[in-house]
Amino acid sequence: MFASMRTTSRRERYISLQLLRSLIFVLFLGHHVAFCLDKDEEYNIAKGKGNALYCLMSNTIDGAQDYMDTFKPGVAVSSPWTDYGALETWGWDLWPLYTEGSYEGVLDKYMSEQLDMENEGGRAVEHRQTKDVTVEDIFYPQSGARYADVYYPKQGLIVADEIFGPRSNKAIGQRRQPYVELSQWSDVAWLNWANLADNVKTLSTVIQFSVANPVSEAVIEKIRGDRTIPGYKKPWEFPAGSDDFNALLGTPNGFGAAWLLINHKGTSQLGIKTIKSVSLFRSKDPLGGDPVINMAFEIVDWTGEPAEGSS
Image 1 (cartoon, rainbow, N blue to C red):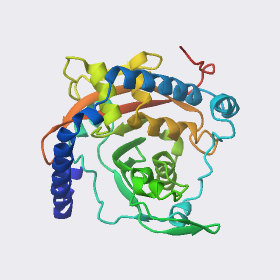
Image 2: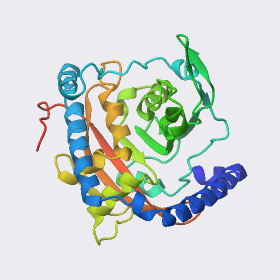
Image 3: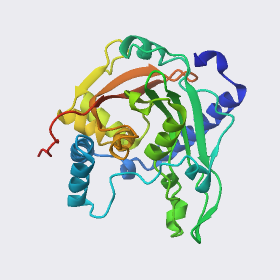
Image 4: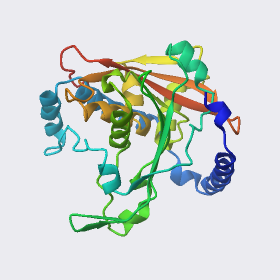
């Protein structure tokens, strides 16, 4: 398990993050009106996005492309990123200090009791986009983005630990400079999964640890109401087709798992898979002890009729 591998550098990093979060919280208090999100509005927006994502997942490559063309003409369903070497081309460096997930052992019981998986054998991989690159004569500044995940190839599990994409660096857009084209978590995760797994089609679960995105939090608050989200023993499970399923899938913390399946349907890739359910459960931050909310996506082979959009 990861608990025995904790390093001092990770703890120091955690303290720095806590100080940063404290500063952000103070700033938030001063500007709470501007940053307040309407839970009902965010829920309805996410529900529509989630329904579209489900239709794209639950479809053949051609069917998904036809559906995509109805609202994003010219955007390809299949990802162009199939070569692991593309990470280096676009300035993504392996970060050697990431030797374990920040979730430490707090997910072990969920993995063993709910997923019936061994919690050994995880491969911690972090990529940071730390280099300026020039590709086909176009200059792309480094963004400082990072994706830190733990891959369990034998068990068919990916734990998304820390996700900060290139577009989190707003200054690049403000300077009207381009973001690196290999930028999505789903593409980086696929390249790592394909590099590590003997059989890529075994993927059955993606867990988003410690949801912290404000839109995702607003949607979860809408679903939660005045109830308490349970721990690993009795997670809330939302089946495909339900409004809450679509809303969770349509959050920033649901996009990644969906696009991972949508963009990699090829016979030499994942094949045609879809998400059967989304679960919510509570755990503790392994260092600070604060409660955190996690999302788990159950992945299955799709064998039915193409999904149709709902109202």
